[in-house]
Amino acid sequence: MVSDSYTAYAVLGLRRDSDLIDVLYGKRIKHGVTPADEANEIMDWIRGTGADAFTYDNGGAGFARLEIMNHQGLRETPGLVVIPINYVRPRAGDVMVPHTGMRESDLYYYTLDKSRSLAITVMSIKATRVRLPGFAETDEKAFLRDLLTLREDPNSNYFSSAFNDPKQNCILSNWQH
Image (cartoon, rainbow, N blue to C red; front, side, top):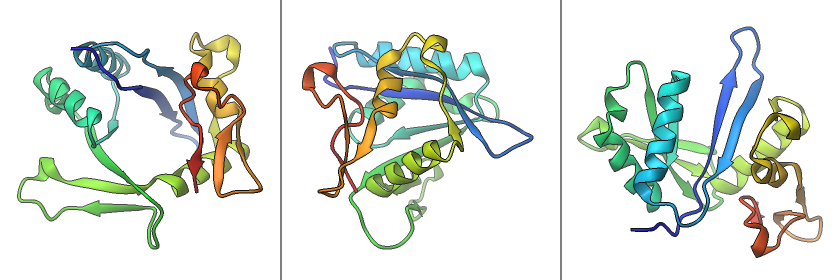
């Protein structure tokens, strides 16, 4: 089965001596890759980097990939914290809210205000609290281009990409805040 998903992922690093976040690698998996191939690629990064945490979109396609990754040993990875997130539209209250009312702890999840989290990310990039690799340091130009061209439209409540062309497959286009 071929996926209709546009999965994007990033490998982030947090230095022990600071509160800066470095984006070490980012990639948008091309359309048409099977869910198993997507899961394999992400598991290779988790294992290869010795990741401490893995967060994922708990809705739709993200949940399907998680099940494949669980069968590949995701939950048995020593020291790995798995954080499921359901994206929600803007609302009052905290940007991220834990939901722990389920009987099984592996069903716990967080909701994340998609628009406000994007606004915080943009502000963090502008303030250099989140640092991106240079174009010459990565083979995935589209991922960086999407982040670097993100701008707020002063005439609306949207963030949009300067490359807001469907042929460009922007990750971050037309995000409402």
